[in-house]
Length: 121
Image (cartoon, rainbow, N blue to C red):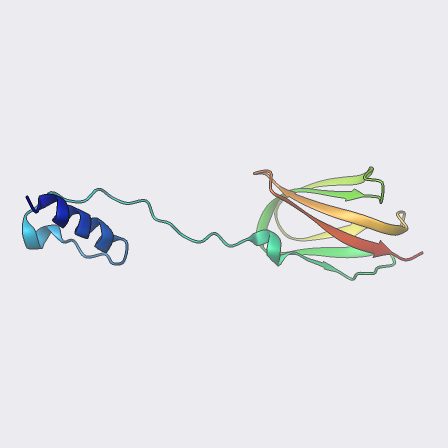
């Protein structure tokens, strides 16, 4: 009768600690629960400096990152594409692209973020 209540209590307790409650009550053991962890948003930790720039910009990631970097003009036309793997720093020469440009960083999983960069001529 209380078996389901004990099972439910154990399931709830397993989300908070690592104690094996089976040793205390001889009930069926709770199945392993998937671990839920907060995934840090690496896209939030991207720095592009200097901005505005006269040409060379450094794209810096907080940890090694795999993906594609695209430079787009104000109309959305792709001016430059650069693939990279396990990079922490990426250098781009934007000296040929004056005015307002956009740097789009895309991960292999399809997540992307776009940054506005002003290139002074």
